[in-house]
Length: 399
Image (cartoon, rainbow, N blue to C red; front, side, top):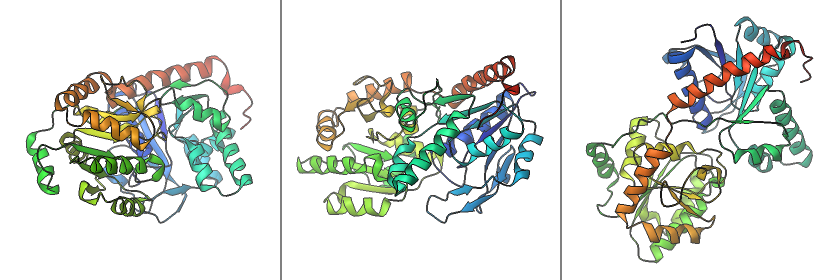
């Protein structure tokens, strides 16, 4: 363990806020501290925070609290003393996991003292800008803000090659490094006792296909396509169950949509599940993960499902499908309900095929967080060495 290095793991979301990036930051901080160096999480304050349960330091800075189901805080790093709080901690490297408030915070720090900085671009922010920012002028401001935060980093990371397209849409023209995320669930065969508990809890029939969607309940994850495809399956006379696991801003609308679609009897609404062993049990009881999102840049849930040999159905050429071989490590289809339904009709009753492809996923696409963070740590050292050998610490900082 290289105790001489000290890394700031910057994130705008950290538990009790639960999303993909908060889980990434949590795993980075945990594994870095256990195996490689000292790491400190830098994140906005949250009125529901329970930081004492973590065995590493969490530095919270000023924020504005927005009451919502997702529980996000908006970082407000503009107080001058906050920059010196980071400088005084003598970090060797600042690693931000989103080009938002915490990245801007690191820019403010660098204006006073240059510290090597990495930014990981995890998600397709142009979706949120187009959806949530109402005016053209506002959209332009948001893109410029993101772009300046991205350009200010000494190195930019993405989690899949396909994410580069989103970077280019924001306006970034520089180089990047592909640094994939890992999975915190161990490879396992989920014990029958645990899957039986899930079956009993939700009254899942034996000998019918069980599908699962796990993730945020937001329309741009292509949830309509899943529901419409299931409607086609029901009309064709097929029996099945779809477990819908997660929460989000559109969950009430999602429930109304599948009820009006006439498939409420085929849906099992599992809601918010934070316990990782229980979540893996839900994957274990399922025959197939349905994840037709073209929004996600990596799709942590695909690797989570693979940990217990559950294959995924994904959209061809999506970021989530990157590295997936159709019929070998997963299944691919077009981005429409008819294609999803027709693919399911071909494979849903073939237990042997589903099992074979699930094992292929576990053997070939799974990557542990330990391996992912070890790779990232080796890159940290390279970035730090190049920063000083190339004299960047003396260059004028223009951001």
